[in-house]
Image (tube, rainbow, N blue to C red):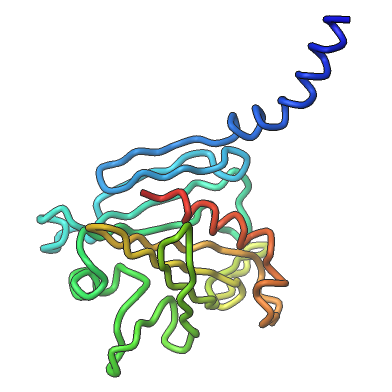
Length: 194
């Protein structure tokens, strides 16, 4: 009887244990990120903008999330961390950060024509945009063949951006429906950034 109860308890608790084991953490100089090991091999942080004032001040970092299974010739999703607020960071990280303010002081993300929306991520405000990006198939490079998704998270004392290649650009504009699984993964990571 005890053996049967033990097996039942193991079957009930095993899914939760498997989920906890699947999560890994990266703690760098600028950011702390949780990620799922089934999706990513590791996370690496490096100083961004070599040779610039931002590098010398140590305020701008690049984050690389190495994918377990590359897609579209892409082996990683990427991010940036800037120690400051959005306004300060966009001036420091010009050309490095995927966000900026346009001539009308509107926040742009990924592409000048991409629609930027404010969304809640784990009770924090965040900004998102869907934009086209590079895709490679059978050795052929297509500069706008991929569908990317970028999140900008203004956190206390820093701004974190995360860019994910969702998949091949199929022309679908119903992003939430077309990329549901991929968006759940991206937003889970964003909710676990500190």
